[in-house]
Length: 544
Image 1 (tube, rainbow, N blue to C red):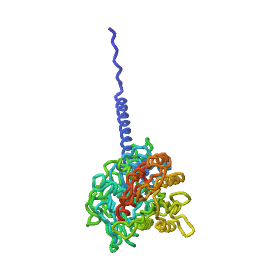
Image 2: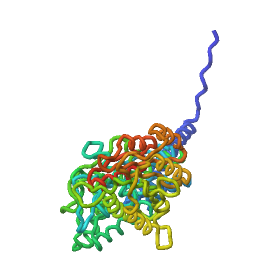
Image 3: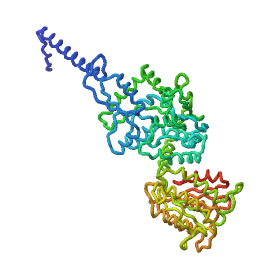
Image 4: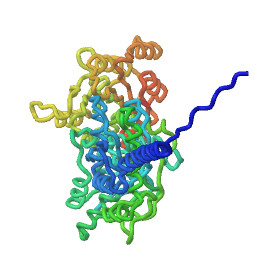
């Protein structure tokens, strides 16, 4: 059997040692290179090669603290920290601009909204860099602090735009949490939101900054929605200003400033995640915590500020259902749109009857209420006025136009349309008499508003009546409702909100009118209820 011979051994021991030593040196060089490369990436021991430039956007009030974290973070990444509001981030999304690698917004709600808009999942590396509750700062103002729903109804309450500000959406979310936990009602929340949404600040090009609102409260009194951190700084700066800071008894929504990876470049996600983790690790330093406290912030654990500053221990209010968060903010957007409403006022003979418990007739009470309420509408609201009833009819029609449907700030012969409308309201008592032709008046009004539809406003008709259709008419109730339903155009939605006065009204017909158009129906039995119900009707003019 043939045998394979063994490989010849080197006969030179010196050569063999050289080979072994050379291999060992090569291995050491390779390992050392890998170690140095690793050290240079994490910046340990003074080793630092060429790092990445990582862009960071942070809410302006926390940006300085994020810069401090970037300076103390381990690693060789070069952080570029920019103060950017959540509104500006949303604007970048709309313009399809590139997002930063890392984002520190004021709340997880903002984070989720933008993630949904760009259809890219964000990775939250740290739930909270710092925290501060959203509170109410006031001086000389009476604020019902039982719930946020009640507090939001405070006349003249100043706040930003919830669509663009985490501070401003916090009280709306707090009130939504109260509804979710049955500490308030949806109707009460809608009424409060409607009044606030129609305020000028909600649609200003640049809503007032929190410091500007605080300065106004200090100078002139009133109340404003701000963060505890902002209010505490003003109290420290102006200790004798009499500024009070409080949260409703139910609690408050906290701004938490989450730290998230938002890069849209998949090839850099791991690198950016490492950089974000370095920022996260820096938040545990005593220097960071001391800097937060000095600036009026709470730490991530939400523990109260030292020395009794701020609002102390308060429950953190959270909306558990994300769909409810979305629907509430969408509702706000709808309510914040300018209103465009044609108001139909019943001037039939029964409107001269005296309101129970008063010396005023029904039409006088209504005019007083409407005139006072006119001042609550912003200049960009459009209002028109028709009177319908036997004495008001003109040119064969059972109604007349008392004031055209125009913006309140539109110029006219005697001043702005707001002034002309106030005069038109005052003329209504002189038009009372005759029967009520509700059907023809509503159909013609609906056709007019629909045909002149404004896509940038909430288009509606508000019908105020104390009785049923009692005029001689060839149109039956069923024919009227059928024609009204046929008039509805989903591409140009116009809702009809009805307000019945006293028990004389025909609540069934008024409700069917509203139902046919997606509106809401209300009944008022006293002068005080007229004020309350009218406010609710305006709040629900975008749908029931």
